[in-house]
Length: 146
Ligand SMILES: [Zn+2]
Ligand SMILES: [Zn+2]
Image (cartoon, rainbow, N blue to C red):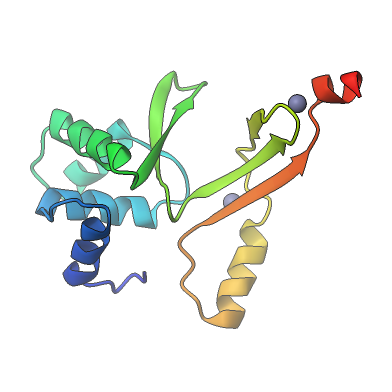
């Protein structure tokens, strides 16, 4: 989806996840698509207020919980902020290490390919809206047992 996505694109996107199209849902989806990382409900609420959208914080939170229930977003705990953040599931932005033995997952916050992605977007003229990176291996505990 590009920056010029129409309201119809957002409507289709919501429908794909079995969500009814509302203006507030569209606005939140738009922010999530434009985001480069995990957004908290507070972030989204603040951005909507800055845009001049009249919305309650509880509505923002309810919509995000609803998105997560339907699989449109994923909720992840932000340890340093002590709150939950939301990121699009299908068009995610995450980097993680996965242990093949115990299936432990270590999230990597730093984006190692931001520059590469920019070049790639230039070269291919794609409007890139997300990526997921996974490294597979064995965690320290599993290595000890081997
Ligand atoms: Zn392991
Ligand atoms: Zn990244």
